[in-house]
Length: 278
Length: 278
Image (cartoon, rainbow over all chains, first blue to last red; front, top):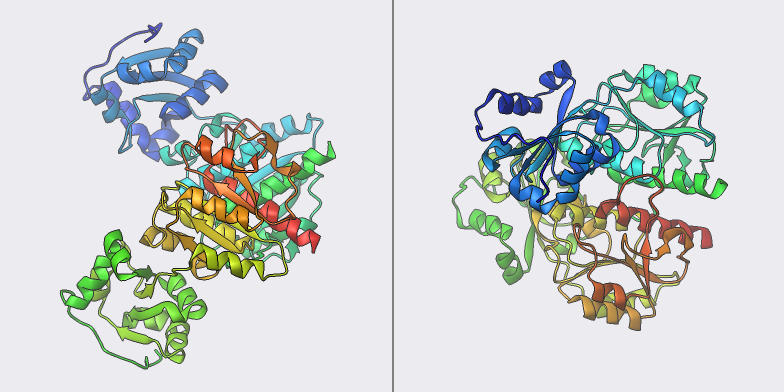
């Protein structure tokens, strides 16, 4: 096991520090402090390597440090605070039935939609944006963010009516993608759609009731996929505010695809079109 | 509420019949009896409308019959046994924290790989097959079967090393697709691959470590996607037994896609290629 640079072995699972970390499982506490907890080696590795500026403290058991020496090494080299903790302390910190021995308290990403769109307009390539509206299931939200990252999306926007992206299950389901691309949160859907439109980004609603089939859409110009709730899709006002309502063709007898699958198919169609256009 | 044709209101949650239905939550009982339980309106509706020959008994509460009159009507018209049950009886039958008031005992699909492949060879279109090997998570297995159905696959083959497709969570995750296309189960992976190869079906292993990129594969001729375990992918011997090891390109910084997403992207690429070739 490499020796962490800043070692303070924490042994008391009832300390104020442990309680403060555990309190981050509550949305109200995350909003107030601007912090959240990333659990498990994959999340911590990606946070440390991609956004060390957002990592406040890494907590690791001796056993997990032995299993993941590269993560600890990377954190130490970036001069982050790494604290060795007992398994009891780690279990008291995290809201998980199977703690994986390592967690990090991170600052929330806090990028405004305005600044994210200005950054996009400076890029030479056409924008690909993914908008989540009314998505309530943490696993679905995280999986869509992971899919957007894999498809090379430039930006993810999660509306105020969706699950909190700093929820532990969302963070885990993104498999580190939360630190790979800008994610804007907290704006209402109409504000998001208006801002994207002003930025010259075409709005494509993904909906099983859409009239336009996915293979018929030109996915080379800048565009945003607008995804709705897992059970009831997009509300009529959101569909109407978009430029086009697009459906993934069903070639067999299935009624529909689930949200994460439909999002992945749409985002990959965009990725493929952008890739071929280059 | 339409009046079911065969009405026997069941009120005793401790009856032998209720115990026999509940016992179907155990894999050993499903294997012995050749029966399994489909829960919820979506599963029951698809079973009744697509494979009434496999439905033994439908159980429904008065409340659920009122919410889903078309399902009850359809079952009655097909001369199936429909039993009204109290909510307590239904809760005692199903292995679900939130029973939805309707369930059906079905016979397992039991189609042999040989006969499924013979049926395929009689079709005019090139075969699209999806093979699941070592897939352990019920939600993933069901989602991939649903994706295969949506993409218009002709056949799903689930190896003996995978989760039981008649597990309640798999059945629920297929969203009815289990009754839409032939699903073969119980054969070991080498037998499956050899049978597909003899039938002239090209074997494409889907694996993040593949050398061939998905957009570079000719997906018009008959082929099978071979999908592996959600955590550790395909074992070396399975990859080597396939004609090509294909990876979905990652355009961003994500390490990988999860199993269901990768499967959906591959199956939809096949669907699109087959569709364009027609």
